[in-house]
Image: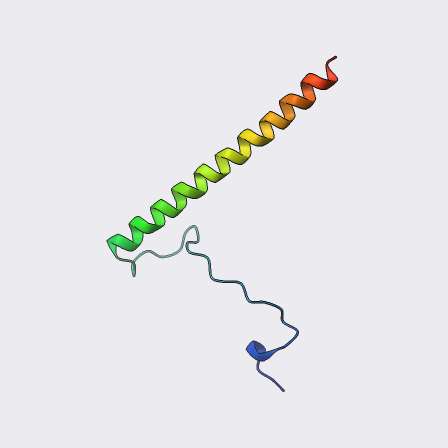
Length: 67
């Protein structure tokens, strides 16, 4: 029987996340921590753009249906 990693039906493997909320930070250097901070700032900016987009869609729908 093949090992789990050799299973042809398992599908593609996900790459490990660059950062998981709450993961231990003891083994990371200061530059690695800085890299994670930059990664998280970029993700926050991406999420804020998504929020603005959804709000604009909601506002447009509200304006349309108030006619």
